Amino acid sequence: MSAFDQFIDKLQDNGKLLAKTELKNLIHTGKQDSSDFVRLQAENLERWTLMLADGDLTAAGYKKLVTKMEVIAHLETIKLNVQARASANRLANGIQHLVIKGLFSLIRSES
Image (cartoon, rainbow, N blue to C red; front, top):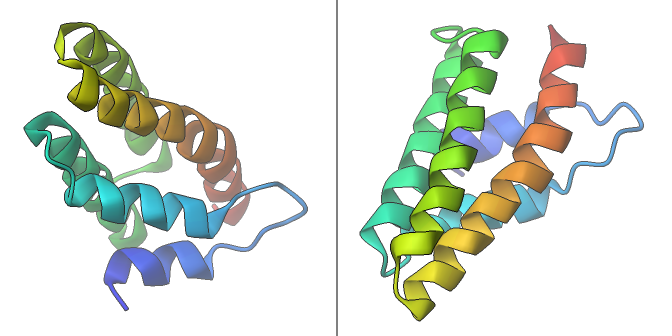
């Protein structure tokens, strides 16, 4: 099991909805995607999450990075071809739903 998976699994779900399996799948499939952009963003998200877990990044810094990533992902979908656009859009939607709405609330409650 990767360090990313271990960190996500350790988070306590204090009555808040977080699909941990979906978040892990978002990262794992993103890292295998044919789009360079999607792969890079998935790797960034994993790296930042590990930095957060190790205390090398604050929750506020993590939130700022991921929020900027979400905006960039939405902008990038405009430029990509149809297949890559669908992958980038899935990543952007996953970031919005799983990370910003779910993971941020859990990180805040863990701090």
